[in-house]
Image 1: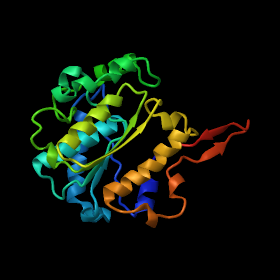
Image 2: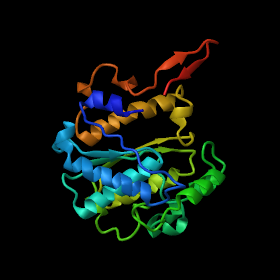
Image 3: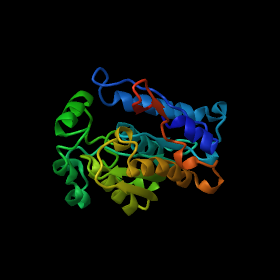
Length: 254
């Protein structure tokens, strides 16, 4: 959805890999597939027309955000070269049990109860999702705040976007707090009162439009560049175009 406009806006090479899905392929198959892809990208960057010295970013949304942060932590721990320079992780999910939340942040972990009946993903859907995926909640390949945390201070800067009326709100907030406390640069944007993946289901909302333009701002921050040099109209470049069908109803194309 966003790979092409990001590539055009920033003159970047963007790789969009696939991976094997649960329930047929439970944890950690998918994230290990993604790790193999990241290693390949690091080794073959020049073949893709990419220059990692200008920025080597890892990103994904929701479960993809979980992958992105976990892969970044592993890349730091094993010393992947060229090094990952930034992470984009909107609507991050990965602290699905209070017991695995670091002690310093347990008091902040309230959204799984507070928003258990939220739209899009409620506690029932979340339970089914975890039943299928079978994550290792104490593994850093699922929970990037799993101990030991001695190397997370070496992680690159991260851009997080958090929905306020989402079961996983506090997953993203606690991740931001913990990384900041370990000296990692964090850009955090919060969208009050909206649910998981809100900008997809309600693209006309002011907050949805802000979320989409924030993606561009966030990528510019991760790459260390200014939006001043982007093509005119960049604020809407990420939006899905509106089309009309025969009865006059407007829908968003995908």
